[in-house]
Image (cartoon, rainbow, N blue to C red; front, side):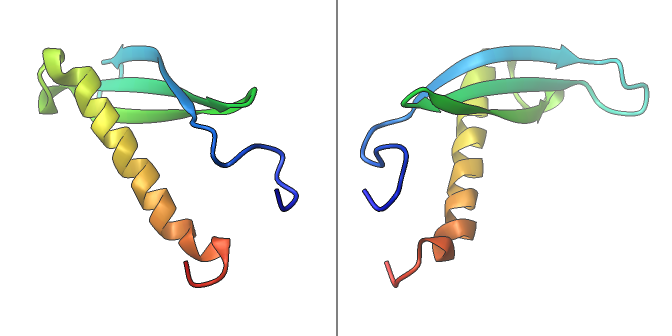
Length: 88
């Protein structure tokens, strides 16, 4: 395992941990703040995404947040690809 502390083949667990509605900014639009907890082998981190309340129907809120989380992770993957080294 090349010095890694976790197994790269093990899946992450991703849980929705918080959904908040913020409307207390007098100059900004109402916003949903959605937090996901990402863990693997006892280690983890939170990822928070924001959605404008008027941009998504309430019934589609969680699905829209999941899509946004995917977009964040995909962009991070793209940006950090060179960190892996090699040509893969």
